[in-house]
Amino acid sequence: MVGMAIFIALIVVLQTVATFIKFGPFSITLALVPIVVGAAMYGSSAGAVLGGAFGVVVLIYTITGADAGAYVLWTANPLLTAVLCLVKGILAGWLAGLVYAAISKKNMTAAAFCAAFVCPIVNTGIFIAAMIFLYRDTLAAWAGGANVIYYAFIGLTGINFLLEFGLNFVLGPVVARIVYIAKKGRLSQ
Image (tube, rainbow, N blue to C red; front, side, top):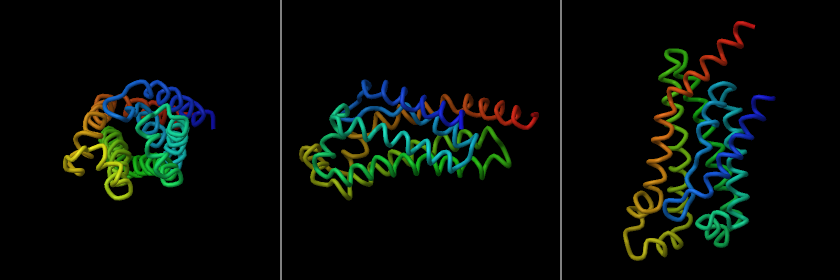
């Protein structure tokens, strides 16, 4: 329980800091690394809880207007936006945990890298799908006449996703090492 509380605190702090880092209308996500580490250490259910905590933080910043791009979505459809904030975080953490569990039996380092890759892909993928299928009018307005699919992938989330994915790639070995040390410590007790 203490470990989960520490991860939740990290998620809150990192996502709060991330609110001030914007490339385009949305803030970058820095909270994915603790989600991945927690999912690897404690399992996919813990990953879902940590992803849910991330979703709650994003939702709070959305509702308050601290994330201006997300606030536009909130004003368009509050219920759908709340569900989107929570579901994309929960699924990103849960799937990262499942991927880690499946691959770690063979290789913990590969498992950490794969989980670290899955988390931003799921988070951003669900967001892009929601924009294309559920917020099409808003997306079209933001695209300003450009192809909405192209705009969703390149203009809206392109740089953010590349930075999030790159951060997870760079920190993948760190994730693997943290999980290895934590699991080794648990086994020796």
